[in-house]
Length: 94
Image 1: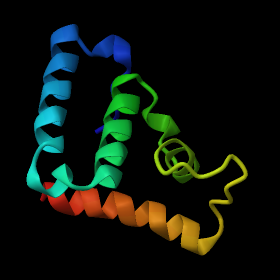
Image 2: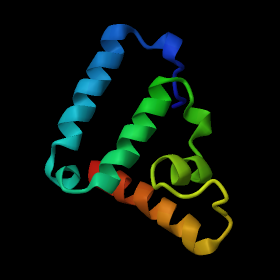
Image 3: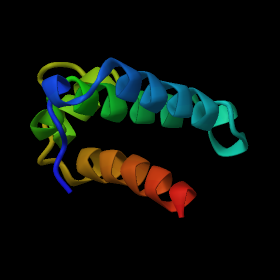
């Protein structure tokens, strides 16, 4: 499934997604984890805005995890931290 650009999301569709996001963020696994909250909010917001193709390790690291602009995503430890955040959120949805 590919991300739909903003133009393809109706206002009511976006509202429904954001309402569901609010419920998810208020649930147990997310409630006490600002890191998970920021990650999921960013992924959903970028997808709704039609920028799903921009969801790369570097942009997530700098936008969500406050890494500096000179962050090197090729350093194994840096990349592992970003992947672990994504994996953690994926595991919670199953």
